[in-house]
Every structure is written in C-alpha cells, then in structure tokens.
Length: 302
Image (cartoon, rainbow, N blue to C red; front, top):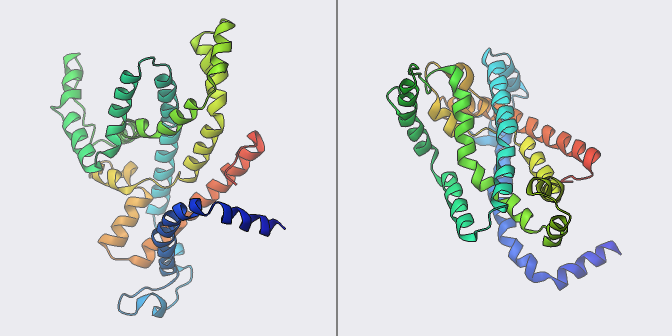
C-alpha cells in the first residue's frame, strides 16, 4: 500500500522529479562513481596494471600510516584547527544574519550582504597573497603595531600565529555566504510575533532572544550537525599556501599530508588509505552528532 502511494506521488508530481534528475546525475557521476577508486587503499596499486589487477595489500597502508611519527601530529593538528574553526567561526554567520535582519533599509541591507558575500568567491591564492602583503614585516598590521610602540611580528612564518591568521581569514571569507541560509530562515519568521512582542513592550534584544533565535534553532542544529560531519575535512589549498618552513609543526594537517604523499610523491595507495581514514572519521562524527541532536532536541538529519 505504501509503495503504491509513493508511485502515485511520483506520477502526480513527475515535473519535480524531472527537475531533480540533473542533480541526481551529477551526484552519481562526480560523487559516487569516484568511490570506486577507494579500492586503491587496499591494494599495492601500480598504474601499469590498473586498479583491479594490482595485488591486494589488505590494511598494510593503514598500519603504515599509524606507524609513522607524523600520524599523531597531522591528526592532532587537523582536529585542533577544525575545532577552533567550528567553535569560533560557527556563531559568526548566525550573529551576522541576526544583525542584517534588524536593518530597516533594504538598500543598505542588500549592499552589506553583497560586500559580505564577495570574499567567498575570491581564490585562496589571492586571499593568501593579500594576507602576505597585509601581515608582512613592513605591512599594514605591523605598521600599526609599531605606531603604538610595539615590534613587528612574523605573522605568516611563526607557528604560534598560524591558527589565528587562518581562522580569522576563514571567518572573513565564509561569514557572509554561510549567513544566507540563516537570513532565509529569519525571513520565514511570522511578523505577527514581532508585532505582538512590540505591543507587550519587548525590546529588540528580547525579540531576538525569544523570537528570532527559537525560530531558526532547527536550522542552526542542522548546520551544526553538517559542520561536525565535516570536522576533519579541512581543505588543503589555503593551509598549503600558508605553510612555511617554520610553521609546519602546526600547519601540517591530513589533507596537506595526503596531497604531498599522494600527488607529489606518487604514493597513491598510501595516500588513499589516509584519505579513507579521514572520511571514515567524518562519517562517524556525523552519525554521533545526529544521534545526540535527535536525543537532545528531536531535530536531526536522519
């Protein structure tokens, strides 16, 4: 009976499924088909023999990774950088969306939105180049520090500044774009709630706390679950570009290690094993975060 109802829904809404088809085709081709290559992690892959004809190696490369001295440092660096980015960066889009929602002028609001979105579309190469100029020993930031009697600092070279620079620039890049979904959620808040609160004498801060935040809470929880599910997925491009000889103790993460070992040193089986371990941890974190969210708030992805 349930299957029959499903097919009736498909028949009556076939236009929607046609619109969905290109996205499903893209997902299958670019996201699921490449998963075939994960087999390399369990084989002594040789390009001349191909994936299927290469001899099986079992969990050899997983053990090889955990036996290296760099395994602990790359995993810990990835976790620390991801956790700090999540704890510090996650609230900013929410606060920014709440701020924009309070603006009266639509023209000013659209202008601020456009300016805040722009950094997201700037290449990481350009972003790191900008950081290198601004934070150079004779750059703007050090000039300001020296004008107040301080001494110039090597922000891009010193290990102790790497995480701060990365997280700050990451917030600047992504805050406006990530706020879009919260702005959309706030647009769905019934205006009658605010009108009733104003009649009762509620101030703006109280309306934000008691109306806006509860209204977008389901969206916040879903986005938090997704963020936790991507906790180990720190992109290698920006980190790799920011790396220097003196900051690799904190900047060498799993993705940059996989890039160096896999593409630069052509150790495909080893790098695939490391990448598969990273993805497995992400999947585990996603499941755990979803279970906790469903238990605490009855809101979950699945």
